[in-house]
Length: 252
Ligand code: ADP
Ligand code: MG
Image (tube, rainbow, N blue to C red; front, side):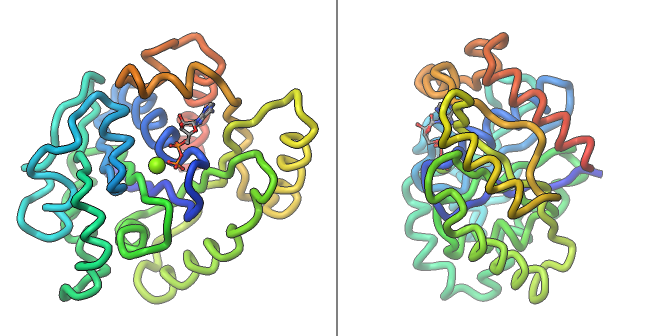
């Protein structure tokens, strides 16, 4: 049976989408059936996988109930990796969702049966704790929290963990934190080293051993519409995401 991972942090630009795309690609390239659901109206994961952001049906239709997941899934250029694409329309879901019945469980309902078809399902969340992220956390088994190795990294993490606790108590008792992931780490700078030490001290059991380095290759891969594992498989960023995929699997 497969597992569903949400990639969440209400901060923007911390590496959620980059992590969602590249971990999904690593798992898929290892031969496991993988699904990425792009839940961000900015559709960066969709475009980063070389898929158009105006396809129908899409993630919006799945959440609003007008299409099934299977109808919305498309192939990607990566073997074993399918995508439910996003659309700018999803921005409207943030407003509409709370008015719909069962507004917090709509994605969970849409994902019913997904664990039988995919070993690894990844939900790329928008940069907020709004209705779409809540839907993702209610649907997920585990959460990966990317943390940018920058000043203010810890800011907001306590709030995020509170939200996870609330969702676990009220709606999804099976939810757990797979781990926090340090991203855009630059080992040459004092700042990155300090942030890493601080995050590991604060959350000793939660932080992945794997750290994602800041890498030009990782940053430019989306402009080619491919994960970094295809853009430059031997690059430090690609190898780091491969290590992360193994660590995620090992943590179970
Ligand atoms: P989020 O989804 O949390 O908003 P993204 O994954 O889109 O964050 O990353 C924000 C920006 O940083 C993007 O332009 C992305 O390409 C870049 N980026 C992410 N990770 C790295 C990295 N390890 N090295 C270099 N650039 C990165
Ligand atoms: Mg994103």
